[in-house]
Image (tube, rainbow, N blue to C red; front, side, top):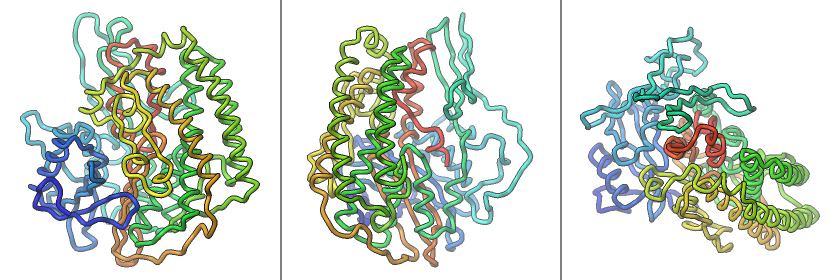
Length: 518
């Protein structure tokens, strides 16, 4: 297929959602980015790869969300001087992805503007030298180096009364590490600059050389709170690569698990948001509900987070009639309690005073910066893969995206409540109509294959691109978390607010530190 009138033919991958792939040249690379931006499309991901083992050079890939589906464009790069046209002028979210691609693969985004691009490292924190690239062929990722100097140049803010507050990377609570540099006057925030990348686990390097089944277990460990979303996206990529079809019962069970994962995270966040606004009662109540939810997960699926339940070709676990009955009973009970708690939230004047207008992201800013997922829907962006490109069983569940236009913390709370109720309804429908049959079909190993998976996780779009070599082993697996797009928007959401509101605003996004540091 051709898109946007470009002289470039995309081939559809064998996936249940519309995903198209093409190799492009440099002019097409830039023209496609411009065309997608003008059509109000979004950048989903950008990553690099080393293809010299196959006799090529390097490559850079970009995945775009459009009205017709996801377009995956790959541009081959010179082996000696791997560089490609910068696309951050069309998609600001590309800036950090391009910096990460340089740190990991050593490919450069060439900026055509007068100011030049951001050349600061993003993931390299002095743990390896500037001329070492973990994802290049010949490097194992096991090399060890002396600690390098790490004088990261934050952007200075000057003016009368302006001072800086440095927070992190180690925090008082049990949370992941990240550094936040506030420029403030009094308590009012003028600017926030983030520095992340303290959780680098080397997962993308670890994928290389694995077989597809081994990779499934690793994909499920990219981000523990999204293990089902990543496992499903990876499985979809492996199945599209192999041209495999999933049994109907397995597809329904996957959706059941994905919605249970969504509810679990929303219950946790709703309680934590209340607690950050000094409403400890909410934390106690939602923690109780979430604990009950996770315990039944363990009883029915063998794991509180439902890890290792989804595998390429179907499911690793099934449920019986007794489990179905318990799960449906819990849905009814939880729905009643969440409805009661929502009434309390709505009628609590002190709580609403903290939530309304705090950390606002306007719909216009959300579009410009590419805000996605739950946070995007709270700022008037209605994209939701389950509704936009419904695949089985979502095509029979009448999914509608929950959205809001205010873009503040209160809106993100409202969307969480809305999605919680919607997911509970879907879970009940999935359990009521769960078809019979097998839950897994064996898959053949595909050599020199390409596949992709695209799933609406609780935080937003999870994307996985998977490629195998001539032996059928993984040569590259790129996993993308929606936090990549949303972390930069958090820097804007805090502007004009006071420093003590940052934990509340940050929690309302609840972005992943480690999920975007692979």
